[in-house]
Length: 232
Image 1 (cartoon, one colour):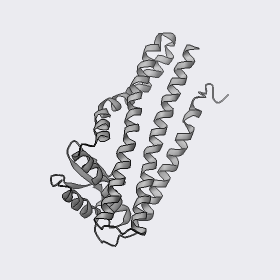
Image 2: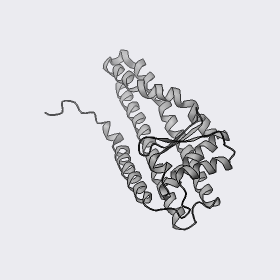
Image 3: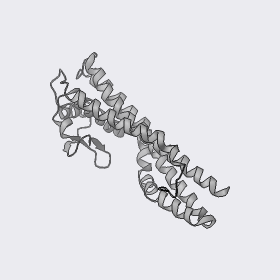
Image 4: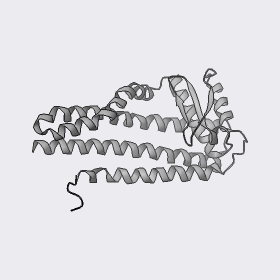
């Protein structure tokens, strides 16, 4: 009586939705935990990022501060590494881990890391697809058999968004591996609890990318199931 129409395909995305909630909790709690643990080097995230960039001959990549929490990123178009205030000024295990991770993306870009190049090439069509895919699909769904083309087009466009999420995984995992290697080899973190703490921060962040990929894949499966039910 309260729900005149219930789409049972929503059940397909429930596992990914729950994983996404857990991933957000995990990354927030882990980051905050190790944000309170100071690194013995006494360096800030900005200092570590600058030093690592220089050691990789990336003198032309500036390190800037950006607003927001966990907003750290490397901009490949402008070749700028941006760190949130907590990471830029922070001297914690979390700050150094995140700063090194973003530096890893800058190194990937400089070395023309293939998965990064593929992901960057997918950005325009993935953004376009994620914006239009669902409106086109559900407009087609409302039009009955005459809307089959729109449904197929929506699925095709969303597939590019899914491919983007899939390609994000090797890019992020590789950046984290590079980060931990640089932090250890250059002596910014010791091999004991410090490196373990930074690894936990980066592993928690990686879980959010896994959740996003799982959500995209299950959303695509949902669209395919709805499309198939139209042909029955």
